[in-house]
Image (cartoon, rainbow, N blue to C red; front, side, top):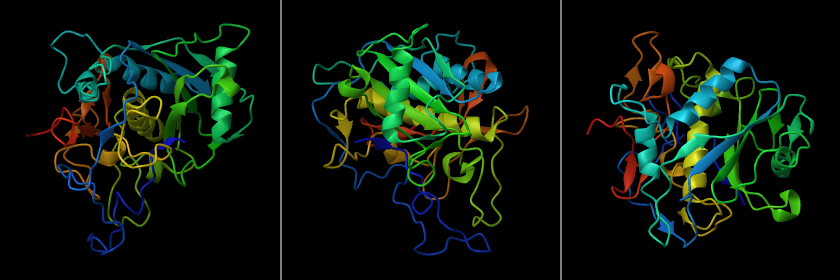
Length: 328
C-alpha cells in the first residue's frame, strides 16, 4: 500500500565489535554499489511524472524558518538553471538519474521540478499522533482549506507532508522514515501523488538521520557533521530526495519497482539505501566530500551555496546505484 524508506539497522549498517570490526551475521548488507545479481527492477506499464513537477510542502507542526529554508533550497536545486560556475557535483545532476525512467510512451520523468504553494498547520489540528491514513487527511485539509487552499494538480503536483519532531507517525522509526503513495478519492476527493517525511531529531536520528547520528552499538564510529547545521533536517533532506525520486518514477504504484507485490515494492531509491558515494555499501556510506568551511559531509551542491548529502538511486542504464559524485 505504501513505499517505505526502511530503517535498516539490521541490514544497511552492520553491528560493530569493540575493535571496530563487523560482527559476523549481524547486519551484513547485500546492497553494495554495483551489485545487480538479485535486482529485478521492472516496469509495470503505469505512468511516471512526465509533466512538470510542482512540489507542495505541507508543514505539519511548528517549523523554524531556518529549517524550512533548508528544505526549500533542496527542492529548488533539483532543476536548477544556475550558471556553470556553480560547484560540481550538483543536486540537479543527481536528479538526472531519476529522469532516465520512462513510461510506455517513452516519456521521461520531468526535468522541471519547482517549489509550489505551501501550507502550514503549526497547531497540529489532527493531533501529535498520526496514522498513515491521517497523512492523507492532512493533504485533504490543505487542498480544501477555506483560505489559500493548495492547487489540485493530479498530473504534476506532489504533496509533501513534513512533520516536525513533536509528531509521531505510524511506523516512524520502527519501520519507516518516510513513505509515498497516492491519495484515495474517497478520502481526499482526488487521486494525488503524495509523500510524508518526518523529522527524527528527537526520536531516532541514528536511524533516519544516519550518518549525522550513529547507533550506540557502533563503538568508535563518529557521526558526520551535517552540512546545514541540523541533524534532523539534514537527515530529512536525503529522505525527501528518496521519496521524490520514487514518487516521480512510481507515482501510482504501477510503474517502476522490483518485487511481486505493488503494495510493498522495492523502488529505485530503496535499492541504494545507505549509499552516498563510490564504494558505498554495508556499513560504509561511500566516499564523501568535505565542506572546507565547516568540515561537514556532503555529496551535492545546491542553490545559494547550500550543500546536501543525499543517497544515490538505481541507474537503469548501468544496473547499479549511481550519483554525480561518483569517482569512476
